[in-house]
Length: 307
Image (cartoon, helix red, strand yellow):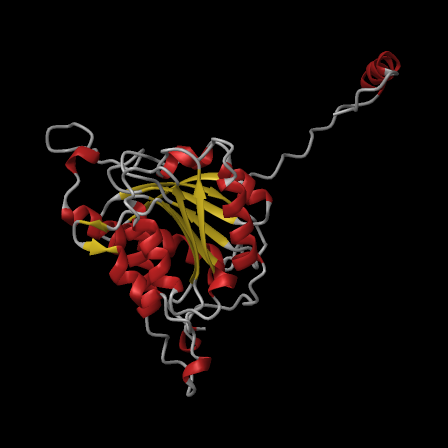
């Protein structure tokens, strides 16, 4: 659009004359950057994602935004996801099964919802939902739109043990047997490099945060952690600090990659977002330091035997 100046009337007159004297041309379409995607898990559940894409930017880190119990991805897509995208991150905001738009019709025709959550649902959020999201990101990695080796997860409350247990399973994946030297083999996992845990739940039916943290705290993995909690959170009972201490206790480089932040009031999880408490700024700085600045070049993730 023409900039507004004190000569607006003159510019308007000139524009009218130009339009009557010359043919009009279509303006180039603005490149689409935000996509509404549906991915289907191996057990047949359709998950709704909002994907903020950096086309052709194969070094862009990826950030997965999860939600709390009874929440959905709109808490992120309202503003924060786009802010991360502007900083250079490829971002995917997820509705886990039975939350938000990721619902199926029950046998009665009603939409499945959080009231139906069972132990098996939580387990499948790890083994099915998060794997489907990772598969989606892997396709974008292979299309050279992001670098999956630099992936982070932001997980409040319920989704924290889900993120932790998924990350543990991701780090357990054995590389392809496609090179004589183990260090040269193409990885199949080990891609989650940063975790933001907001008022993290200690347990869910079928899984524990502490058990996963004991494995992920291994200094050799060099996973970065940011723990966030409300100072007066009556539900927390010190659990967030215990998790922080569990991870940082044996880490000589704790001050460089393991952080603990508190925020005013009796607020928990997603209630900390959008309150001008600086949590969004802390998350952004943490992700920039531990993902954007991470030196891990893009590489083809297919087995060398299949290229």
